[in-house]
Image 1 (tube, rainbow, N blue to C red):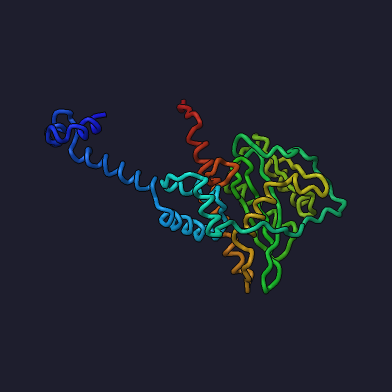
Image 2: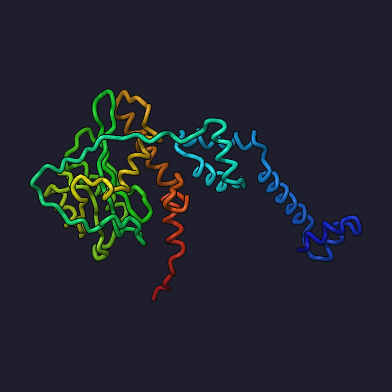
Length: 298
């Protein structure tokens, strides 16, 4: 490399002369070694300096990241460090992700409404957007009473593409979330889109089934009492409650709404997802779109 040659012979010939002969700029030569020095500095951060970065990530994510995601976030920020070093440093200083917590089931499957077959059958790895959507409902406690959240997730990127927050858990909450997803994505009615949910009465209601038919979406439902059949939604709600809501007291439903929506936007745009090779849902989808072949218009 020309820069390495110049560096080796800098005591023999002036740098400016070498740059002119080798047809490289003096500014480029110095910029190259500044970058190398900066990289070396990042690679050899002291434990104290690295701990500052780790604590910053821990604070920004509100304790949502354990050592694997923290390590990936450090790499994304240009800080080259071994995962074992990050793990040991976090353990030494008691920095850990918030613990998992069990939450109550909100599904009411004791009804006589029609039940759709389980078309998904736990095949959660989907090869393109708008092929399988999943929906679910959870609840959030406030001093004013319960706040209910319904979401629609695209299983390809795990992105939350629709949601509704209401103080009641009627069929309207799931219809609103589905309509938001539809108007955001506008999937083709010929694409064979599947919507997977539990057997809750909201999803089995005629009004909801009519909207699915209107959009050309085929319904799929989990088996009775089997939360693993809708594991992606359960995981999302667990992350929301553990990373953002647990330990907080909301005086009003409005406060809980604001906090929940802020987390979902952050989750879509920024949160590193282990299933997606540690990129955010939106970045994962953007990367997929960028790699699709471009067809020239006729």
